[in-house]
Amino acid sequence: MFGIVRPCRHGMCGGLFKEWMAHLCGLCLALRDEHGHASRLVTNYDGLLVSVLTEAQAPASSPHRRAAACALRGFKGADVVEAEGVRLAAAVSLILAAGKVRDHVEDGDGVYARRLVAAGAGRVAARWSAAGTGTAAALGFDPAPLLVAVEEQARLERLPDPGLLRLTAPTEAAVAAAFAHTAVLTGKPHNREALEEAGRYFGRLAHLLDAVEDLARDRARGAYNPLTASGADLVVARRHCDDALYGLRLAVAELDLERRGLVNALLVGETGRAVDRVFGEAKRERPGAPPRDPRLRPDPGGLLSLLCAAAACCTCGLYRPPWDEERHKSCCERCDASGCDGCGQCGDGCSGCCECCSCDGCACGCD
Image (tube, rainbow, N blue to C red; front, side):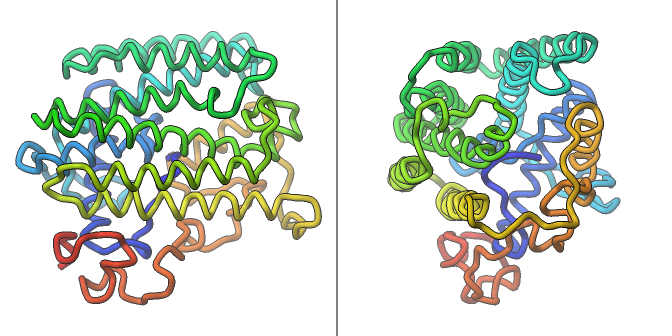
């Protein structure tokens, strides 16, 4: 699981969190049913926004079903979304994950520098790209913007002195195309412009926050990072993030949505918390910040690091390797449950919680 939008049951109304989990499990099951178990590795939080936006615009065209018990849900059944929006989210996730894997192979990053690993990863990337392209075509979505974005990103990263916003442009274009197609799926073409705008700002946020999160690690390893390449510091990155947050909120406010609660909670509330969280962590990594927890081992890299990352993914983060900074934190701390500012009402119904969750009154469904 990865992405900048990481809602927690303690930071969101109970009804909204159930809706969120219905999209999350729906995406995972859609990937499994159409593309096999291995494709479930590309399940990510941010990709789910495509499914959320689709259902918010036309709830009647977004059917649900009862899923069987799953180990990741504590062997419990669940209500999951089974609609075109989930399939679009699956296609986008597969195509972008394939591009990311290819990029690692071409750069020879870490374990990908090994010939056998690179060959296997290349075959997986090709399979994912073909699967995502096929699903996109079935939904009437042209995957060209996503495929071009991956190639353009690689080209820009080879330039000697690119601007920071120039580096984020391919991600912005890819997310804008995916968001905009939800207007086609739901028969609301008048939403297309605002969705494209929201997609561009969210893509910029995702790219910048990923760069800020990886900055210290990339510097230590001598790896590529957009902030280092463009000469931008954390102050510049924060300013761009704040501008993107403002633009994103305006774009979301313009959307014609039948159910606005979850969209507001994610694209307005959670994105703001993500910015605060990432930059707060980045400041702690600066010189003079508190030292790293002495109980943590250094990341060994290579195959062991890859296997431990897979184990953390398969257990939804319950397992953390000995070098993970969240290893000794409680589950609530890992989920960043502080987003409610101590209102004490989240998960207990509508009373007093709707403001902190950015939903619109009882429309959140948290009865």
